[in-house]
Image (cartoon, rainbow, N blue to C red):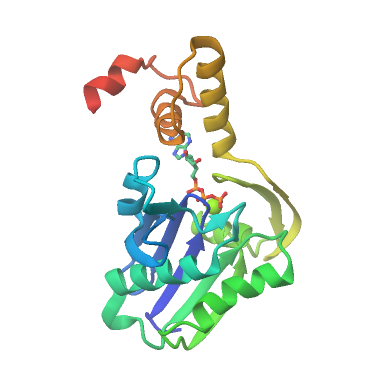
Length: 228
Ligand SMILES: Nc1ncnc2c1ncn2[C@@H]1O[C@H](COP(=O)(O)OP(=O)(O)OP(=O)(O)O)[C@@H](O)[C@H]1O
Ligand SMILES: [Mg+2]
């Protein structure tokens, strides 16, 4: 395998690209902003900054929903622009390994494959890899050992629970909820109890800043104010 290899995870919230050659991981919001219905205005983190703040002429959207490609054209534009931005000179003839959720249809899988195979970058090869296997390799687990590893990947729209042993998936279940469900609960709680309306971005920020599964020093909303 050459160094011209890219590992891709098209998440509902974040798009991650691992470049084997440089060892770097690019992590940008999987968001696109379109102006006048068909002109690219911004993508990635720049487009996410406009989410919930853009005028009617700019449509900010997420091309991946529930872990699968919901807007193929915009996803193609996004991935093309991102690869051009970060890996322009090395991208021709590269190998792409694309992580896909386990519980999806053949048509949904083909969309992930075509996105790269039919791209202008003319890849040498495109391989689809089940997300739990990619997670295990990323965690540096010895996936080929006869020991069962349980992996729980909580994303924005999906939660994938899998058991891996001897290099293969023994069990896997894809649940259609993730971090966004917590954001919605925060929005509903503030609305119901405090008559306060906040957007999804604010809810996510509150969750990530104040929430923690492990006991820690108590954080307050004032802390957020100080940081911003
Ligand atoms: N420190 C944190 N505390 C709580 N939640 C967090 C934290 N950091 C990130 N998250 C949440 O994790 C989710 C994003 O995770 P991730 O990038 O793995 O999702 P994704 O791969 O885009 O989504 P999916 O796998 O469902 O397609 C968001 O809902 C985000 O708010
Ligand atoms: Mg994910």
